Image (cartoon, rainbow, N blue to C red; front, side):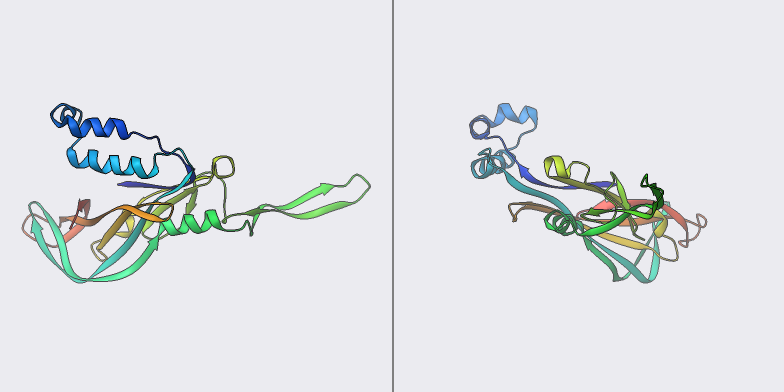
Length: 230
């Protein structure tokens, strides 16, 4: 399960009002290409508001809440077993806010690029020290991995200076989920345009474990993760 987010400071949208108006007039025909009445209405309203080719700030972000399960009880789910119990919030992060803060911040982070460099000044003298650069966050090279015990997070600002685009991707660190420490994840995906909430969806990620044997509900190791809307 991999999730992608981004912050485009100067995004532009085409005006497709005529297309979606036609969709609403011919629902039977457009149903063949997978456009429902609800989708067409939503897209028409969006095009009316933002399809003006003016630059808009569009943020697709994720808020992640991680929960441990206190004193889990184990029950069978087919051939697998699942934990159940009181959820304790152990970690939260809003990656949308993180990249928004980075993109709107001053370039004031000092990052060491290379240590103990020796440079000959050509007059019999040398300069020895570290090469340092200004950065928006520590580690501005492409696909910078951010250390986190529960998530595998990578930031990519390789297009920021050129196109004002900043993105990231992350997935769940499955190694953090064990039979002794089962975890659940609540992931909210949201879309902001010019700071206004346009859409959000919430999903829950829960673990299923392989049992020690077929006659018990005691867990042996993680099998896979399930995803649901509630």
